[in-house]
Length: 348
Image (cartoon, rainbow, N blue to C red; front, side):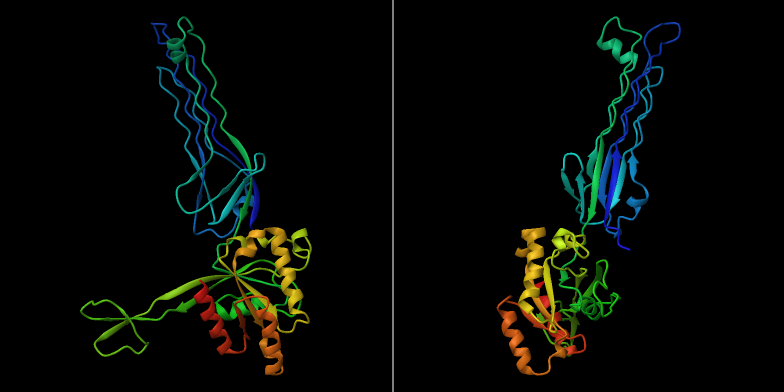
């Protein structure tokens, strides 16, 4: 099960209290300052793909600073705590509504540790005549976050239930998404990697500049080929009213926000292609109007059900009035699959 949301409470460490102490035989203040509380950071871990950990442990606290010691020795600082999240995770402060999007790079400070309190040695230096007073440490910052994980993919397969998205993902990639002839077979997003062999490069043995060349190569030459890896995400089927919570609701619409290209799938079995297309577009607009600005490819699936070329030509004319990039495909026809792969590779 994909765990893509959680609520967590995070706290930086409290500062340690200052100590009241005196040098033996001298009577002078000797209490040290308390240690600083540990900071709490968030960082991206590319090896993570779920928020499961954050549904089992709901609160995290960085270590506190230690109490000041005698002989004017300060307490030890609390160690920093770093929480690890999947790429594309969004942290939303439930009070201030500040949003923090985690990307690969330096850790992000979430909570600042509290300052340690002054011991009586520090107090006496700053306030002449005050020898028996020490201050408590400051509390560390505390925050509550709504954690949302958004899948990072190049292309997102979207459409109504039974549009053939999962079957298409299985054929294009090594994914094993569940397929069945009933609505909402896909209950959570599935990912797959489409591997596309790019046009190889020809390079002679003397190391001259590479030139485009066919797969056979030529004598005295070596052929270099490059593999392009495109991540596809199969988003569970949407229905009219999804942005208002109907069907599976907008639970998975957030995953579409991070994809570069939308593969809008509509089955050739549809009774009204225009209505099906507009339903999905309206739900995207209701959730986030910026989704309509993404590059879109209209993929007409299950083309094998069309009885003749006339029916296909009719659907094609309708489709071209909806989107500029239209591809017919059938999971039973390798030729149409190859055309779709080429179109995806070109778009990405």
